[in-house]
Length: 148
Image 1 (cartoon, rainbow, N blue to C red):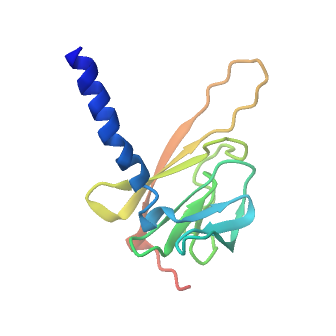
Image 2: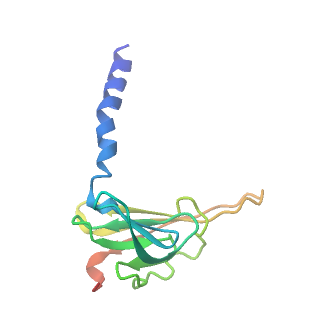
C-alpha cells in the first residue's frame, strides 16, 4: 500500500512539469507541412513561411529568447533564414518523408550551442521485414553564420 501511495504521489507531482515544456521559448515556433510554420510566442498561433516540405514528421528549435534556430524534416536541415545549413543536405542517406516522427531535436546538456538531431527512416508496410535506421547528427550553432 505504501508503494502505491508513493507512486501516486510522484505521478501527481510530475503533472505540472509536463506543462512546463510549453512555456519555454525554445518550443514556441513550429515548422511543418508544405512551407508552413506557426509561432505561438504571442499566445495565439501566427503563421510564417518556411522552406520545409514534409508529409508528416518535422522538428524545430529556437533559442531561449524565442528566435528560431533551425528546423528539419529529418533529412534536410534549414536555418532560420530558410536556407539549407552547411552539411545539411542530406544528413542521412535514407528517406524520412512519411515517418510520423522523422526528426527529434534534443539540446546537448551543458552546451547551449549544440543539439542532437535524431532521424528515423521511413519504412513502408510491404509485409517483408525491413530493418529501419535511426541516425543522429550534432548541430553546432557556433559553426553556423546566419543573418536573417
